Length: 330
Image (tube, rainbow, N blue to C red; front, side):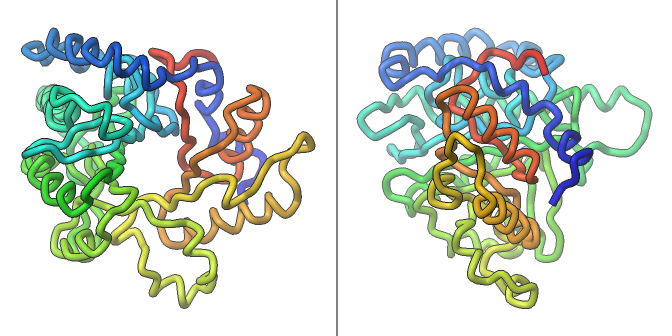
């Protein structure tokens, strides 16, 4: 458990999440999805513009849930400082389309065009700038700078939620991320150690976990492990033999209400705090980062209170649905 001083250090930047506006709903996405494409097309041949997305942006430990609901996919999240972005993937021919459900998809809104290609150009530009600097310690384990110039060591997590036909999604995902892999921009596990890169790919939802395990020699897609399934194995000897570890997983995830319950007007109960601390301890013992979905978003004071307690107790990433263009204030 964190002490008081460590707690405030751990939640540095968390309050930047608290006044963000409500996310656009599905109707907005349907009506204005083309605006995302139009905005991206303007930048298509101006790679120097991409670095401005994160210029003077301080990364914060927030997870942008359902990125398809935001005004401009990818840009809205990273311009706000989010270090983790979630999107739902649906196979369509040789493409992976992104959207809230199969009835609200557009071939123009796909993983390759709106995520892989702009990130590849942004990272190439950021790392080209490093070539003009004096020799020194490299920011990442693999010597490459990430998407945030103010913190080049920070990896950006792309959380891929598998929609329809998970085996098909998997078969398309591997070649889709090949350009990032070939450039050395992906976090990978090479049988003995995890080498952090500027981009970390995590698979969630109905994922064929055995496919992740099969890539044992050079694994660069990690799992969103089920946090609650780790609880019965709360024994150090058993933990070492768990199916889920930092060798194959990145997050340990649980629905907040299923894991903790409803937070009343008196705040977290003693039991809820004990459960929270146990879950964090178990996940961290496996080298996994803790995240919860379905945290309260209204009323605002309850939302803010829950987020601050989660951060204080060591939860690694705070899930948000609402974003402004850039976080403001403390």
